[in-house]
Image (cartoon, rainbow, N blue to C red; front, side, top):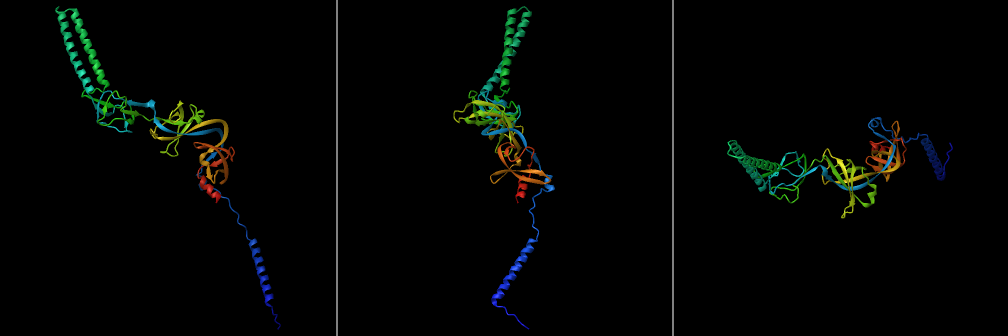
Length: 370
């Protein structure tokens, strides 16, 4: 038997060829495996049934101008209670912000003037009774021939004057509350909220000081005063649509219209005041509440418009999800012109008639990007 002896050099070459062959075989086997394709996300039917959509439409372009302002009472629907007599306040029954009804007692004022009015009433009543007796007696004497017609006329005149004096005393007392105990009773003349209160127990009141004791307003609608700087005066018009937001109700918009423009600048702040009337049936807006105000400024242009809920902001770019049907949605970058309330005007990226997703948009956007 013959044995072939390999040198170490030859053995090394054989091992290299063997390894090279194994590598080629491995590569050939890998190339035979199917390549897995990246599957595009399809919105599942369970989620699709819960989605809401909006259609891109062409609408008149409206720009908005933002201002700051403050909520105020509607001064046309408020009543200020001024003191009718002088005296000292006591038994004040209400506080700032309380709701009161017409005729409700708010407090009392002890007053020497009320005592004088009551005394005048008593004197007038006594005088009327005396002149009435005098008239009857004079008429009886006239019938007996013991008094002249002049005496009867004089007695009748005195009686008529006494009647007039009593009526005057009664009216004065009624104007001041008809109280005969020397007190002026403060009553609410209308239904509404106490929005100002300048009286406490023990307050000394003078009817000539010109300060109201209470201010009552129903707050069914309120005024919002916007501060407009000179650069924006030309953009404000009567009847412009207004959107008001507050810190107390984030995300909620109160709608109104420009109702009055004060065509003069405040000498201190250098702003022009613009008044907006806002319905306030739920009493959500309170006097002196800070407000952010956006006034719509229509332009003679058209632009594509879509719900603001459709917008997604990511990496310094706005996107919308255009729905193509059958669970297919595509991420579409858009260029925004401006936003007005819940609508956003689009410069480019979509076309009229496109359907965009406005609910769960961020969730679907994340799945499409994964």
